[in-house]
Image (cartoon, rainbow, N blue to C red):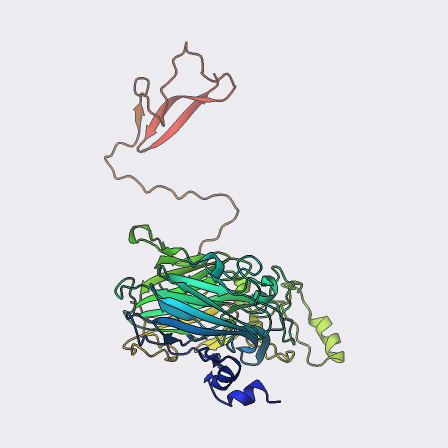
Length: 503
């Protein structure tokens, strides 16, 4: 029995399993397989309307064949091995050799035919999340179709009636199969090549796993207590950068099939939210952001003009989502002197290292022995030291004159002189310090000489909504309570002071 890797050949990235297709599934399009976790160049259209293809971060685009005007794709649901980061591999379920599955691209108005072959040990289906299609093609097992049993191939066929960003995932034993990594993106480009055109179009999916240190298989019963937060089943420091040429119009599409929301924050830029999984946002309805919250089971697309060179962080702003596998029950030792106990422990375990007594920043630099197949909790090195991140974190790298189809890493940005923070060794200015928690009111600036500083305002005959009239002595208050009511206003420039009396 040959292994999958032996059959596909060492070093092969994109492989066509044509031998299998011709023997077991005569007439099906070849099932392309990807064996590397590196970001693959986009597939430019060879037929039909032109469009700017998407670049799937640490992923790839599924090729298709034309058959009498119909675009045919072949997805294979199967167990996969995914390198989540250097030194860590997970045993997942996915499509065509990878989790997440390959991105499907087509054009508004296309008719697509998608063959789905099940090589899982249990039945499955595929739901086309957010798409308008016939009920029988919706992919809900038991409701809209029979489940696809192991070894069987089903076919989905429908017209793409609107452009946008969509997702696909199982609707059969959904909790288990999504927890194992079965999901992907489906892009429908506008029929008009100029509509919503951009220069660079990135896409990635948010997913999460619960994999114990030293383990390979996710826990499938986890509800919210995940420990690995991923983009396309990939962890920082091995999430590829988003490489952009200066002045490019850039779109970033983000899908979320985790069990929590994710506020995706990008440094250095503000941007416009231009799309949801419901469709494109009209120009007059777009809103500016620097962080966009991706709800559960939804996607968002945002756009910006790459005007500023540099290396700009992009990450989920839930801080624990930018860390790798971590213990949820680790006690806090900040401020605790552990020197005595450390000496005693080292007599039994010489390599013991105390952590957490001064925060957790030392985790980014220490070289602690970890269990096999485990990524450090805080990791990644930049040009100036440890980055101390993990999980959902990457970098948008904006550079001059990058070729239109070049997405290779340009290296670290060199900040021009005078544009980088540096250590100060001179005399320090005084600094203010708050002595208590009371609200501090900044004093008004002094008024110029010769200006009227106080003026009495008689409001008896000049009622206003914000300043009620002075009450006459023989009038009863409208409120029978013992609340104090204003009886006179004394103006002090543009501020009002009040004298109060009981009714």
